[in-house]
Image (cartoon, rainbow, N blue to C red; front, side, top):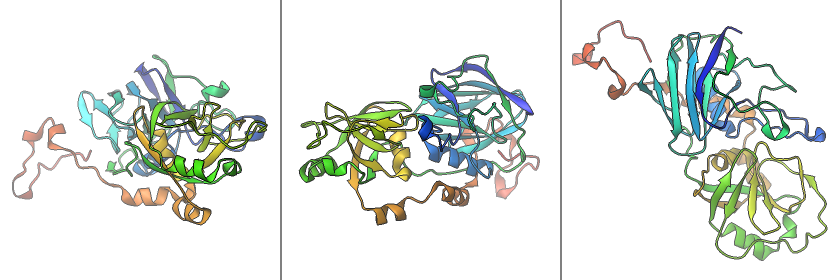
Length: 338
């Protein structure tokens, strides 16, 4: 541990998250971890990390933070208004925060989950192999004002700050679905109606997203004696009322509702960032297309690194712009890249 992230004020649902705890389903613990997993891979690319490290997941609202050491940060996921000592910071970018400076992060401008990552990562005490809070399992807690989180030193605080244009995922879209062990419980007509329907998000959290639609409820042909079995993030459950609920990071490990199919992992960030009122559609695909379209997470980082570009500050964000010589390509000479 080399420093601290001090929480001066905080939104109602901010937690520490990383890649979670795979491998504990038999003990009744779902993997958990970041709800929008692509966002923490984007942060790793911006910060030059070999793998995503523990960070802050901010559901709907950020907070006010102070770091006690010079470090780079990355802001990814749902965009929020970010101010460093009153000056605006670009989202989907990395920035250098001097020790003692104050960072303010407001509410989501779109989407649902924003992420604050630091160059060296957080150094909270791991539990069952991860730093992630898993509130449904009673692991960790929502962060509170005056909490202090230990930081590891940024290994390259002087590295150039970068920006990244993320894949669109903040305004809904079409999610690809593969069949599952209970898909055949739904008739061909019922499945066709599902995939032809536009759904609206009514509510969501780290456990899952509930959808509404016009028309009759969706019901399997026979599921009255369905035995509870293994479920996972991305599964599309149909409740007893015929309402679709799609599972996310902190879902339970077993369930008895029939499942129409499972969303590709690569499309889950669209679901994770779907705030109430967002429109979603679904498209059924076969396994060969799914394997081609959804590479394993171990392959996510390299293309994101290649997509990073040097951060170019907007003139509107440069308080001392008049101090720069902008004629004939000349500059003042003592600028710091930000």
